Image (cartoon, rainbow, N blue to C red):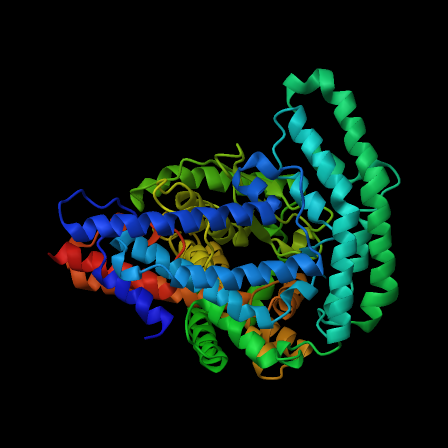
Length: 596
């Protein structure tokens, strides 16, 4: 029995995922409790190790103990962590699964799956790729400055210590990148064309001009006013003395050594062991056994279906012309353009707050954590997509944030706003990730902060479709925006697999995108280059969304008038991120209980 089937079997027999077993004189329960305790200890020890090894992650989720540290990225540390993972698997195998309680059996299966997958991936040197147009070591501190706590003097003092660690981390990362050059494992050269400019964005004549400095002192607390001059001086000195010189060194290395020798081929299959590497990423990102060719065919079918629906919307709008002409009309008509960055931002914020009171119609459980909408930082806006979500943390005192790209206003039409807010904020990523974090304390931390791409991105895309039920898509133009967003994810299935398993060129991918989507030219290029440097990730959206829609249809048909969409959504979201097979088994078990 493979791992996916095993996990599904757990859910077919389980009645809950995170409940404490009832007390009983049954001797099997006492043995389960003892084995549960052993496994719980293992989970806690591994979680503590992860927080120590990856202190930025610890900060991100609200654990302040390592706020003054950055990870050890040396070759020795990476080798040690890989060995510790192999030793961890042996410990996991030493747990007697049959003696665990039902909730712990699910935890065991998910944890073991994660550990085994990590070990399987050790053959592929992901660590050699430390930089791309999407982000990396060049802007890590500017990104971190947006999410570190800023409540007291110690928070700032810890951040200064991290800034002083930047030269070490960049030196270690350049060692890894040189190893990548030797092995032929780098991002394709064509995708690195703007990276030197991104590095230069972090090199400033005055520390006060640095994106790090600006982010560090946004929302500076009034209680620290007496300390402000000292803290500003300490941050400025660390940027001037540590960050800027180290970043200049990185720029020199990148321009003189790395970029000239980066690989020319764009397909992951061109890398050493590349076909197996891509298959590994596809399996991990989709949590399925679908082959790249099967996913390619699903994408072609979805593109055909969505094109037909776009035709219907064009007719509804009364447009006389082809679908492609309609798409160009919507992109170029000034009625659909924002006049300023501020207008774009306020439009998104207004839409989000109009959505909030509608959510109880479709959900029984709402997250406690709040969220906000901010512009993508200027230092990265040119090369990142239209929007992305950064999770918050109640423990860290940080709201979730949807970052919307205000760069190149003509490429940000009004009719695209509805679907993007639904996907990135509510009831999409903020909604799902906050609820996952807010699961009870009896759910292990690795699950409250877990990541399965097909589930998380599939939910985001599914959330876009809920706009019809939430009363968002009120005219044919916003409906086209919804379809354009869905088309983007369908095209991804075709283009990603085309690039990495079927020998497509970059121009071929751009042309296919242009012919079948309503995306602006700038976004098309950003998207294609994103798939080139992050193979397989783009497959998760559609694969996950199709599965959630399939499960809703099956549940609705099986339960008829007894189907409650609010309860269905609570079941889908109630256990955090899951592999799709586990989610399917959970929903089927819920349907069976409703029938009983």
